[in-house]
Image (tube, rainbow, N blue to C red; front, side, top):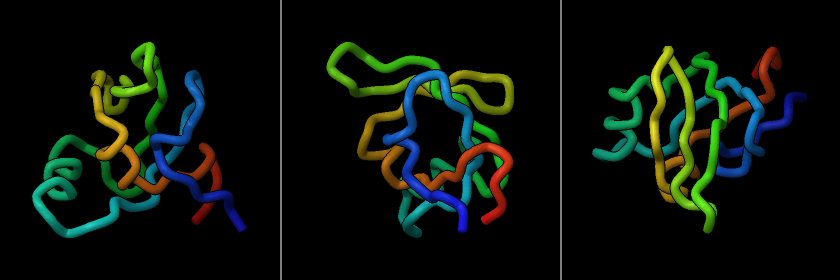
Length: 82
């Protein structure tokens, strides 16, 4: 069974694949609009000195998310089937 975690727990420099976004509210819809949907590859680029926010790369652009937002994105190790 694949190891599922949330995007906010992925170490810097790692790449993961989005499994799901939790919730059905405005934040979840906005994350979907920003491209965070099932199957998308995301790389963790860097974190702020105190750990929040974090910069991610997906679809060829960089996205900065707070921990409260990235904690809603469930991910699996790159190449792992869910």
